[in-house]
Length: 406
Image (cartoon, rainbow, N blue to C red; front, side, top):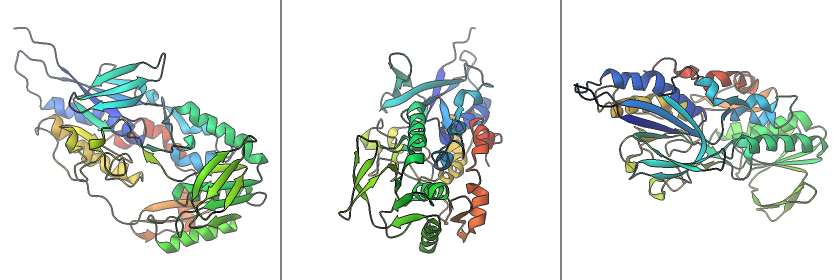
């Protein structure tokens, strides 16, 4: 008796950053083989074929951590090193098991179990993709500064680098907006390069730097280190409006009623989750995908839908929320795809200890690991020396997931 054709089941991964690339490799190397191993179809039915489909607005993995140094000067860190072609990491997989779609997700229908993608090439046509399972890993981006993501495609980000590299050497006044990690790191890099020759100001909307991420003493230490680099820090001062002037400068209206003129303004005021395509019923008050913090399932979206990283409600935006959550997530995906015959239900337990490293300039920094304060020189050695740029190809190739997570 002839067998029927195998059913194709799409596992769609939305996002081509570290989270999306990582889970795609994990699916292909570990999850799908484990699910197929426990499949025992009737003789007249072929086992289901699984295909991983990754959707990303950029054809490149973009190494955001190093952008704070690359934006200062091409001599310090050529910006081209921050881009690595995604497909170069997936050449070992058969075409029938993996597909990459260069495009932006613009719609999601949980009832029909489809996503709609606007393709980046040609006439920007739209394509509807059905999914058997869906992993949302679209990350977050700045609505005003393409340096921090490639959500609008890599060309917009590359142009932002070109503009900064053209204007910074001639600038007399530089303003950085935002007292979080990106703002402090950016101000430190600018101070190390230009602090003796240009007026540099960091605007912090809080009473201290790094509020909510590190203890007060470390925020104060960061401000002191910036001061030594020639950066003036203004606390409890937010940017209210930004006006681009004809000469390329920027006028800033501030929350205290004052104003600033900046030859160069670098906006580091925070990222927004890339979830505009997600139905409102699946989002929390901060426009993040409402995710079960233990299983990482998006329970309101139906079976086999998950979210990972800074677009998900369980995360606070740190990369550790991706690395530490990937293992539990993929065990649950395996369990769900196999209907309980493989994998196991595993709970993600978020690390609540203080963990954040913030380089300041070329030799200093502040930070803590597992609740322990880390000396500035150690912050520099761990992160500030290279911002891990040497690992970009390993991440693209799924180097962290060669072995199955326990």
